[in-house]
Length: 243
Image 1 (cartoon, helix red, strand yellow):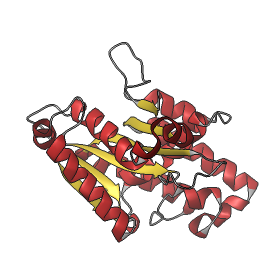
Image 2 (cartoon, one colour):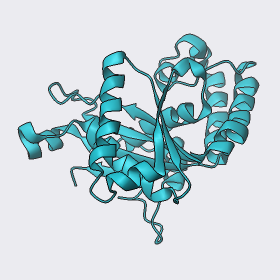
Image 3 (tube, one colour):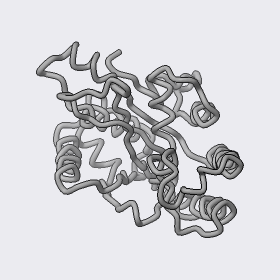
């Protein structure tokens, strides 16, 4: 079974847009379930053990960049350099495919006005479609996303239900039900390797779309994007809207 682990960067609010980060990115990784639960988890645990001396740490970008909680040691320059060297090595060596949808919220709102779709729901539509294309029936896939709060979780489950009823532009409702068995919401504290890798992927994509200086993490991610037969990832692994 294939798994799509999802995470997000930025917020999907269109009524109040942050001028410093006017983007919403929904993205993640596609990976085989056996690999995610086996080798990927083992390699991530080995990384944590090597860097922190224990593996019951959950990698979370928001805490990493702020040197908070389990990542307070990152305040030390030498340790920080060591951490990112090992993290980049981990992200480079693991086997996964990246898919993401980034929405420039101001442009989206300007183009569609009151008819502008919620960025989360629009992005989910795009990613479910790309994931569905990669699942070869009769094999199936599963989407795994992080639990947030009850309201947002209910919105996500309703959006997933809507996709199973209406389908997408290029994937019928029947095809979605045949190829994707469900949506599984999991807690951050469950320490799931696939969700943590999805978390590490979305912020560099957001920085790239925002035109910020490129770092090693995005150069790694660029090599992992889903591509067409010509090797093109724009529109296939990374969708930026509006076009």
